[in-house]
Image (cartoon, rainbow, N blue to C red; front, side, top):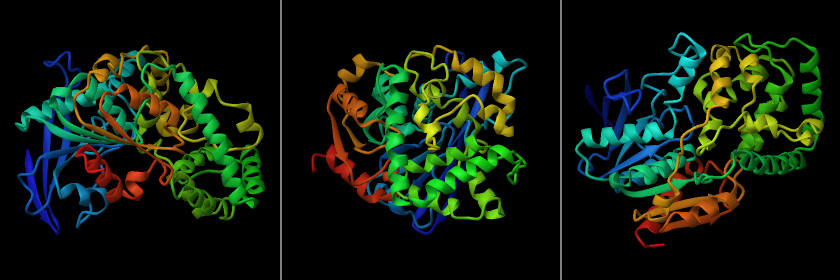
Length: 409
């Protein structure tokens, strides 16, 4: 099914595509993957730029009218294809209850929603649309997916742009989480230096939550450990202020509770929690790495956690509880490789990537190691932006990456 709309500054074409749940079993269960093509009014014949968004578990960006940010820059050279990755948005969704009569069947179902499957979906869609090669822009987890694309389906690619998404290749998952915790401790210290009164405030809130039954609008109990997950904001360029503006509210008031509940997407997008650690599982099992490596200092100092998942979340978040058994099985699952290091060393596709020097979620040293592996990759290392650079200053970021690939920068 194809539907076209004309809005100020763009032509939108929406399509639904049928893809197999398991690409190794094309005659089995099928899923729907939704795409939205965005073209300038005079750009319907421009080459495609496929956007792979962050996550896992989030749908593609929804375009504004007229288009703005990175999309405004993209439409000068491309048609943008926004892909609601399988399980998200208008694609066949993954909700709280997973298909399957047993936890093992549910885990097997969820195992088909990683980056490797997303790449295979994209390849089916590319051939369906009759495209020889297309360009890809990957943000965060979308950058990980772009690396899988370069590894396993490079013949479909014209050029690749990656922002905040150079994943370690073949590195132990525990190494990754140790590094992010070092960054997180530093970011907590920086936050409390900016807002010193919030230190006592955060401790008092956690103390009260340990002793009081405080309910969120969803009726979930707000626990101290769930409250500390507000540190997810600490990797955002405006995150210190987001966090401060919650802590300054009166404890337990409606605004305080609503803002905390809206601060993360663990209930809106359940596979963000259930599949998050698998994003780093390049041929290994994760075995609850973030929980095993949680530093004592974080707890003792009352610091916030960030983009980490813990087994207790399947207790504290009612919407996640139906996936608890499957999540436990996936934590012990030995995942297939996400990247082919030999193919990346032979790469002949033009690639440009941002490496954010202070990125809370993607360790700079590991990103630089990855950049050195991918043949021909041109890195832009900067301390001017945070992990959300594409969202914060998208025209500039994408413009520079395009210039780098074209040899203009």
